Amino acid sequence: MLTAYLVIHVVQGGSLTLDIVNWSFLALILLLVRNPFEIIHLAKQAASNVGEILLQFPLYAGILGIMTSSGLIQMFSDAFVSIANPTTFGALALLSAGIVNFFVPSGGGQFAVQGPIMLDAANQLGVDPSIAIMAIAYGDQWTNMIQPFWALPVLAIAGLKMRDILGYTFITLIGSGVVMAAALTIVSVTI
Image (tube, helix red, strand yellow):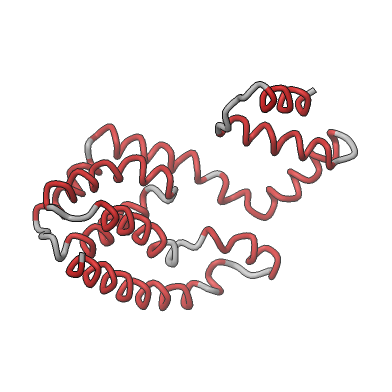
């Protein structure tokens, strides 16, 4: 029935929304398993590897809500912008995004909150909007090295713990931070 709904939705010119994507994945899962009990078994097996991490995401959503509604992200970003100029804006926005990423580790959620603020700041300073966008994206990627949730599936497969790779990712954090900050500064000067 779900597949039929999706086909009708597409045939009638329905748009591709996040709900339709989620429903499509659910329909695909239902088509690939033998019965609903297999889904439950697979979900239990998968959750045993990442269950502790999954519990953290509702907390991150709460932190995002608090930071947004309290104006903390606005104040934090404004502090960086107040000391920035067109040349240093990219590097400072990278640092700002990196710090915010510790509290809001969702790239999309972070951009939804911090993006408009940084784009407005870039506009006020006469900085190309692409610098602000890249600084937020780089900042998110940069501090993901010190909290590497992206590595969880690989760690589960390899039978390793986060502490086994943290030293390596810390070195990557330092090296990539220098490179990203320098790249944003150079690009800011040339644009």
